[in-house]
Amino acid sequence: MGSGRLYVAVVAGGFRRYATYRAATAAGVFTNTVFGLILVYTYLALWDEKPHLGGYDQAQAVTYVWLGQAIFAAMAIGGGGVEGELMERIRTGDVAIDLYRPADLQLWWLAADVGRALFQLLGRGVIPFVFGALVFPVALPGDVATWGAFLVTLVLAMAVGFGIRYLIALLTFWMMDGTGMTHMTMLAGFFCSGMMLPLNVFPGALGDVVRELPWSALLQKPADVLLGEADPWRTFAFQGAWAVVLLGAGRLLQSVATRRVVVQGG
Image 1: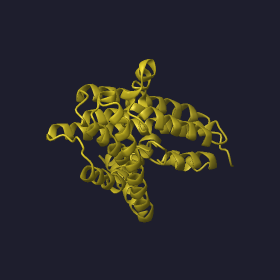
Image 2 (image 1 turned 120 degrees about the horizontal axis):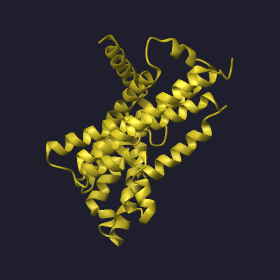
Image 3 (image 1 turned 180 degrees about the vertical axis):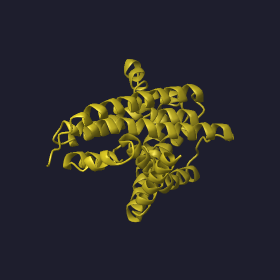
């Protein structure tokens, strides 16, 4: 019970920490809204030429855009999660303090990232989504069950996203600088999550592959559940499986790294 309260406190601390950056949050809301407008008009032109592209009608495509802008920061699709701080602590050796805490390293950072994600979802994501829904025709479900299933997919997406970024952060134990890996992961996130275009649009073998990668669990899978284009239980199974695999791999890599810790910086 005490351990559970600890991680709840870390979640709450992560939420409060990001809530203090009011100017950054306002700038993020503005940026997401502007990018949403750019993408919406691009999508409208594309769907005018090819109606029902990827199995979506125009309203679904517009909804997809605003959903992407709503969860972009929460899922850290372009980076910006707690992995940057963890990588710096590994590089400087401050991670040794984390290892001495009476808490699990992976769960501690997972809890911190969940707190960050929850604030970004509420503080930065809600306004662009509501704006898009008020200004453009959208396709939103009218039943509580679909909204409930969608919220479950967001929780699972947070776990998958953290699992990917935690693995990348741990590579700093062996690399002098993880910036390159971070940038590669960011590009993969943009392309393979469906942030630029829905993965349903991708043709042939390329589409088959990207839809099975873990990044699809961050945006494409939740979007399909919200839009009524996917079975929620199969989506839960897909996201849950990737969360288990990635968090398990992170646990294994963490164990290897901390057996022989070589501190780069002292």
